Amino acid sequence: MDKIVVDRVSKSFSSQRRGDETIVALDNVDLTIAEQEIVCIVGPSGCGKSTLLNLIAGFDMPTSGEIKVNGAPVTSAGPDRIVVFQSPSLFPWMTVTENITFGPRKRGIPRADYESEARDTIEAVGLRRFAERFPYELSGGMRQRVQIARALVNRPQVLLMDEPFASLDFQNRLAMQELLLRLWGRIHPTIFFITHDVEEAIFLGDRVHVMTASPGRIKAVVDVPFPKPRQIEIVTAPKFVEIKDRVLHLIRSEFEQSDRAAESAAG
Image (cartoon, rainbow, N blue to C red; front, side, top):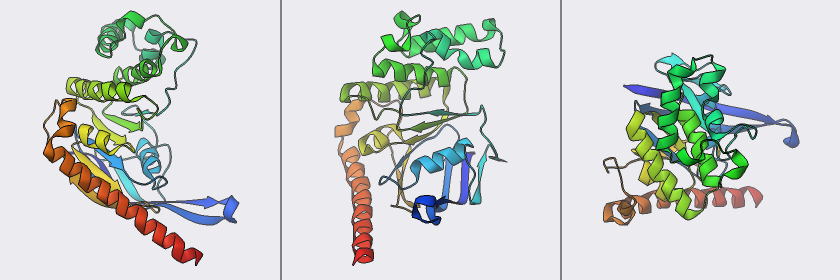
């Protein structure tokens, strides 16, 4: 069953800095994501990855085409789709527990109905000893764990993740990738994951979608055959390296084509 369907979606913006010139961010994008699937999106900067995420989230509407989640057209943001951003947007005056349980409390859910789930989620992300700490007392990796836990405690059907680990150091990034797969194995949400890191995309994803340079289109879809759960050691497996080389080649060719087009326009 398809959880998310992006059907011939285009998105244009008007740029006042360019004399009201119309800028096409996405052009006729088709994409489907099955229930419980992890799909990773890679491509050159400015190719429309975040624009596509915002459209699926319901933060903005397509210029043309349609997006459906669970068979229903997306017309606004909804609790079935939760976004995890690159920078944790935590409430600094709230403890870890208060941040994580903000959603259920905001919706008026009785404490008895979410307390056990919140406690289990805090344990799952390794923050039990820090449950009563404030965000300023946590490392960057810990703050990102709080953001992910806050999303998961709401039991979203869809997690939309916009480069959530980009600001972390190498070791924390690896730890967060493994953590995300463990958490996925626990509640099996459908995940749309944007990243600039090809290795991260292959390690996490069931499929990797490569986008073209602006305007953004789907250039290629690369299947990832490794079963989950995955261990970080697979990044050295010959098949993993083969897939990585293919994705890098696709992205590199897009950069080269974009450079040639820019030189032609300038000359």
